[in-house]
Picture (cartoon, rainbow, N blue to C red):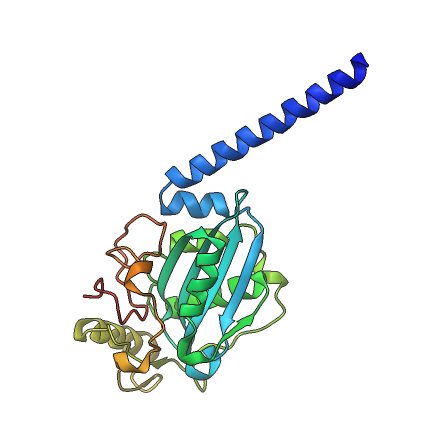
Length: 249
């Protein structure tokens, strides 16, 4: 009887210790900033990895990855990708319930074309490749890329067999977005002219706000700067479609 009682006590103590560690882990996550949260979450199990189904036909779309924490919370990132030229144009960092995460993905369903499930390795290789392609023209990714990319953790992009071909018809195609002002457009045009030559890239008319889906992030889903629910404010410039949000300048 004494042996059985000791085993029971040890199991109970181990269970209590595990619960305390889980609570401490949650507290560390909730008290961390964007960088810290993505760093903590990079070891959590992946529950979502998907890409806009229209990405390669339209040249612009989303890639998303989400991970579930020990208490059921989700940390995730949605990247706005321009695979024809600019790489990662925008980043939304997310930390909230799993229900809110799936709702957020629904809001990013551009034009009702839907998401396609992908492997985590596919999403990482796609995003990393888009960044590298843009950098070859002297164009840096969105400033939240570094923090957002921490969510990938140890995901090995080399395990994805898919080979991506960026650009359009063998050269970059620059399509200005609805929030790309004259100064930004001029900066990109100069960078492309300098790195490729004036005849080595294509340019189209700017995308207007009405071309984006009306199902973007609503005001209740973002802070004043456009960061998704549950994340601390950043200097996010909110190039993602958000027609109902006052945070767009």
